[in-house]
Image (tube, rainbow, N blue to C red; front, side, top):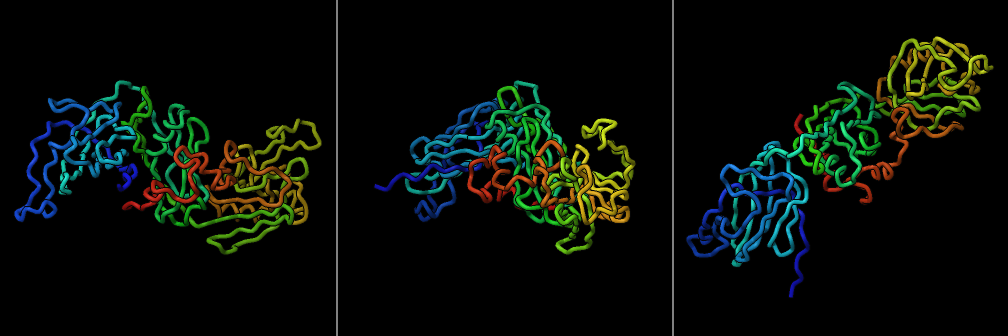
Length: 419
């Protein structure tokens, strides 16, 4: 006796809205069942749900297709009018299929059911159905960031939710609906920063000159009994050249690379003992030609020997707490020789102006060999790159605990779309 085949998962969903008609013979003119076109399998399958009369399917309920015993189901697929598929599971014997992910509300689906009879002849049934409105009016809206524009290759994407989502299964529903497409393709993943915020980054930095689109397929999708997906405005950004600035705090030197080629090297000073500059990868958050910097902003009291109040030019911000790369003409004598700042990276006015003019938001600023702590992944800018790829994936509701490397869902996500 051959063992039963394993349960198969198919991308689909299904529901009935029409009465099933009588089947037709599967035999062709030569009498051999396998030589015939697929027969109408209406009398071999049944569905749970409404059967006409203008009724609509309840999107809260899972869907089910069953075979009557004279044949078996071989495949079920369904897609709504916007191209969204819903996952389902077919049992080993082909007697029952049921949906395993939610349907969208107020949507129209086209369902294709494939069968075969006891002689092995193929059957087919195609249905369309509509789903009704959700019973609740609560919506989960999504706002994507950053704003549209061109960024450096270190810029993460963000998704801000209008309501907290704590349950892992519900997070998986949300995350599955947030689609990112990159041209050229780049393997990446979402990471839940907290209950209302997700970040997306590639395994490595984005490709230079890439086009990246992010959109939500969450509209009308049931997340929980009282929460449904709302609309979201899609976002398109592009990347510029691959610009990476590396500061070695021990040698007091910064080297800037564009597309892998060194374009400038210059002396700097970083944080002195007690004010050490953070190690790790940071991402440019913005640029300000003139900033007033005061010691009180980092906890230094007025009147202290460390107190300062300065007007600083060509300031490139890398943390929200006030770490910059900026002009520091007062410390030129120490630049290249000693660390004398309060945590920022200081350089001559000319070098700071050049740096200011040659970097953009999203470019990478990496500090090595400092005695400071490593930049936190979240909360003070974009320290996302300071998590290993393995640990980044642990923050995904879909990928946590899966082997490293792209899953089938990830590979599908990486397929480029027409642009």
